[in-house]
Length: 217
Length: 217
DNA sequence: CTTACATTTCTTGTATACAAAAATCTTGAC
DNA sequence: GTCAAGATTTTTGTATACAAGAAATGTAAG
Image (cartoon, rainbow over all chains, first blue to last red; front, side):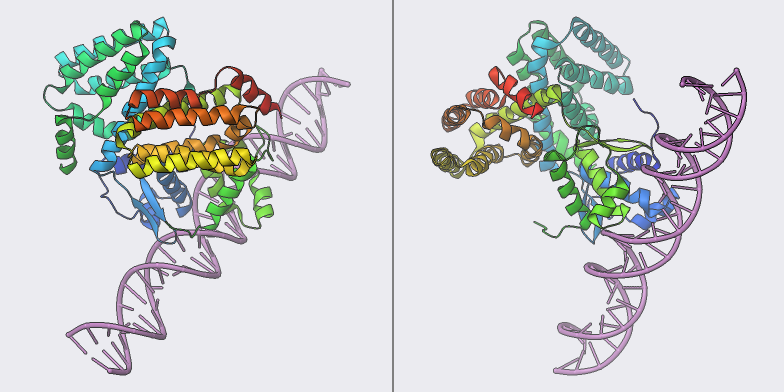
């Protein structure tokens, strides 16, 4: 992997973080000149970074008017989570017949570390291991294109997934679902794995109200 | 919809077409200066267009080296078609319980026009109506985010799908599959719709050799 | 006081200029 | 003749300059 990044790329990453972390509100204009000053660069790399934001879906560009941050609303989030659920289900379906023994072992280990993290109330580790769990399934689908798409959406939804997992009782239940998923994969049951992953990721029932509530905060 | 495009956007579209239509070979460097001259603009809009190509996956950028066209190889195409199959399956699964009567009617009409086009040996119309058929299902899923993702991939695979459909006997068989899909949607059977769409889109059996063969041409 | 229009200012989009890194060419030693 | 090191050219990445369109402000008429 190429570690050397051009300045514009670093700025784009930073800007994504800024949009993520709520420094901007929906509809805010991303002023090229102001950003150029705050990053101490010219407008050129800023414009490249903004284009990346637009093409990633974090912002919208109106020709000759500027680019404006577009934070997903409740409906957008529901749709994105539903799409994520379907993509993860597809990964699970394929992984059921393709994942390696190493992959299955990694899933088990990761789940173990997840459980330990819950016991220690170690949120950061839990989030990290949870991410690894899902990425291991993407990898297990043995389709690098699908894996990349899955990672892209996972990354896009990351901040919202975090707020979801904070709710009481959600983490133990989530772990139980992980076990179910692993069992299906071990049995090579693609349909069961797909179903388990879809239900695990989907926003349904009371999770919906929790998601809405988290948006106002 | 905003119809006014900035110059860079028009150039990006043209460049995509050029890469599509085989004017460039895999690994070709997209020379900024040469392109600027041929489009009679400065490097600035060319660079924006190239960035779009890179972020769309048509080209790869190596920092301080330039951007190079990346045409998908056989493995890439298999992976992309498999992903498309899963995404279309997801659309079908959701559409089974959500598509409107108008949507179902449109599917029927479109299939009719497809059949007529086959009788007239009218390839262009057939391709167009086939595209509409699938997009109607995306729409039927009632998830605008998923719909957009599906359209994106469909667009990316369009040139390869066309070469596929040219093979003898493929078009009538494809139409039979369309009927099966519509039937499942009418019955509200999500799983059947998903299965039918997955099989319809997936590259399997002799289609694989046809796909490989078309790559050498 | 409100509204329509003109002027001004500001912002984006594009062109050009410059700096730094990579590729290429030259030259010299072995 | 081959290889290596240095110089030269090319090319990318960034900064700045300029042009055109949009927003803002001011002014005059009703």
